[in-house]
Structure formats: structure tokens, C-alpha cells
Length: 465
Ligand code: UDP
Image (cartoon, rainbow, N blue to C red):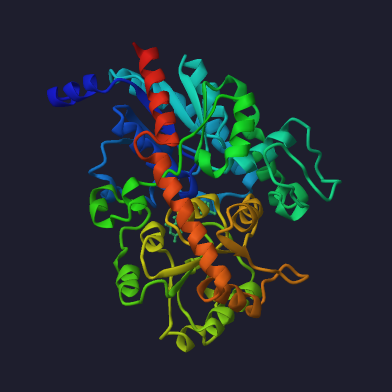
């Protein structure tokens, strides 16, 4: 360390190692939370896997005073294309990840500024076991809603039996749920047993964690947060989104870019700049979900039928599913891209609604930026998020599916019109703005999430002292 670095180190009080699960939906919120910790004087080392790091543009992060390190999931070279099954991947990650995390902790310790606390993604409970071996504090970081956390917790404890027997599910702090509102694994145990286990195992050693942090905000999930706080020291710290976006002061955000997975953001924004206020339908199914060919076709022709401008993210691997002639026929109206800077897009005044798979980050980002949604949940927790979007927060509608589970083109067109034109749409947009204001309040100085982060940092510093 240079003298200057040493001076900086003594200024910092505690040191957190923040370990993110290696997908965009987990790294983004962990990075944003790390920045908030750093702003409160904590030194943060952000850690994820070597393989995902290849897709991160570190150039976007040079002005951020956070150190980056990697561990291994056992797939450093080929990356996730080499994975034979989810189960094999998770097992390899647990074994190789634990080993390389230990090596990393030793390396950091030798550098003279050892780690005090591991903030680890709830998908990686083994990180707590490693941390405890080193005598460290542990804070588990949930990147799903508290409602979903509660459902999974009940399954973990055997309090909710799967496969479900009842047609109405009543759990504390939650609205009455139908089986189709539950995370997909609860009614579809056979498709992805390894993922189901991963989700339920989030609670395997939770009682040994010193803190339980959740990327949501109190006002959004009051009833269920109140209930969870009776059993755990749960703290809401979200939405993990830079304050500059919540203020819609984008020009200030240059140095704290959100889009670490692709710095080329200009094309989308330039296109949006030419569109009028609230006129564009933004469509994205996140970084993982896969639509089948029929659904892609219905969506494509539904967008065309709506006659609205649209910005649609179709990942490279999905492009071949676009119907023949669609791009030519809609070139005046639509822009199809393989990735877009979602935060910048949602914050843009041209966006009128968001057709979304209801991933938790997409949901939080849309509601924090006041964008009404058309919910098209695909799997995992997305159906529960869709239920909340429609019936609890009332800032969107769930697209109706046919008996095969497909949202037909007429339904797509209807939902877009409902939000963009109808009276009911105005109400949804109004509600979306209400949640945006509450999100901003929660993370602003003195807000519920800000106070919880402050408390976390104060306790960390006390332990250190
Ligand atoms: N994202 C993005 N551009 C894309 C696709 C995804 O910026 O083209 C970001 C998005 O803003 C969110 C995350 O990646 O922060 C996706 O997380 P989410 O929980 O919504 O869905 P997942 O990809 O995990 O299904």
C-alpha cells in the first residue's frame, strides 16, 4: 500500500466482503448496496465469480471506490456454457467457491486490512460457514421480495406442504394466494429440483447470520416485513438503486453508472429521445427467462397490433424466434436490441409502460421509477411478484393466458391499450408514481432503508472498536 492508500484505509472503519451470486439480477443490487455502504464509510470488497467477470465492463467502475475480487465456481474457462446441469453447477460452486473464498480471505488478511463481515447472497449460505470459520460476522442479503421469502421459509420449515393441496394459501402478512400466484417450483417441483432446493436452502443456516438484509423497502411490504421481524432481525435496505435515478437526475449519474454489463447505452437512449412523453412500450424478460416460439410470435404481433412505439430486448440466443418479416414490418415503430441499459430506459420520459417478466429487480426498478407494468411472469418468484403488481400495489395488470399458458396477441394489445389509453391505466400510472415517491423517501437520508443501513454500519463499527 502507498502512504495515501494507508491513510485512506485508517479512515475507513469496517471492511465488508460482499459476495454476489453470478447473474445480473444479483450483482446489480449487491453493487448498489455496496456503494451505499461505502458512502457511509465502510470499505467494501465486492466478490463474484471469474466466469461472470468476463461480461462485466470494469471501465464503468473506475470511479467507484470499491475493490473487486473473484472466486471460482469451477467453470473459469468455458463459463456457464460448460455446465452440464444446474445441480452440478451449484455443487461445484459450493465446493470450489468455499475453497477459493477461504484463500481470498487469507489473501485480504495478509494485505493488512482484514474483512470484518461477509455480506453474502442468500443463494450462497455456505459463505456464512466459511465466514464463521474465520470468526467473521455474517449478513445474508436477499434479492427477492419478503413475500417470496416468507413463502419459501414456510416450505423450509415444513409449515407449507408441497406439492400444494389447498386451493387458497393463507400465510401471515400475505394476501390470500392461489396456487398460480406461488413461486413456480411450488407447483412444478419436477422441472427444476435443484433450483427448488437452492431457494429453500436459503434458510438452512439463517439463524447463525448476524444480520438479515432484504432488497425491498418497508413501506412496500409493511405487513410481511412486520411479521418477519418478529422471528428474525430482518432489515429492509432497498431499493438498491442509485439515488440519482430515483431523483430522475440522470445527468448526475455519469460517474456512478449502473450498466456495468454493457457500456454502449447510447443507441437506445438516442432512439427514445426522439419519442414523445409516455409513448413507448418497453419490453424485456430479463437476463435469463426463455419464451417459447409461439409466445414470441404472439408478443411480436401483439406489439405490432397495438400500433405503439416499442423497445424490445431480445437476447442474441432468442433472436431466431422472432417471426419472419417482423423486423422489416415494424422498423418504423420498433427498436429491437439484444441488451439495454434498463435503468436509463425506465427513467426515460418516453416510456409509457413496461411489459415485464416480473423479475424482482425489474419489478423494483419499474416501481421505483414510477412505470406501470404489464405482467407476464415466466417462472420462479415472478408469479408472486405479478400478483403484487396487479392486486396489492395496483400499478399494473397481469396479461391473461390461454389454456396452454400463452398470452395471445389480442391480450397483449388489450393490456397495452389498458395502460396507455384507458382510465384504469391512468390510475395505474398514478399508483406507480406513488410507489416511486415512497421508494425515494425510503433511501433518502432518514428514510426507513437509510436508517437500517446506518444501523448496520454503526453496529459493525462498534464491533470493530
Ligand atoms: N438488465 C439490464 N438490461 C437488460 C437486461 C437486464 O439492465 O437488457 C438488468 C435489469 O435492470 C435488472 C437485472 O438486469 O437489474 C435483471 O434482474 P431481474 O431480477 O429483473 O431478472 P433476471 O434477469 O434475474 O430474471
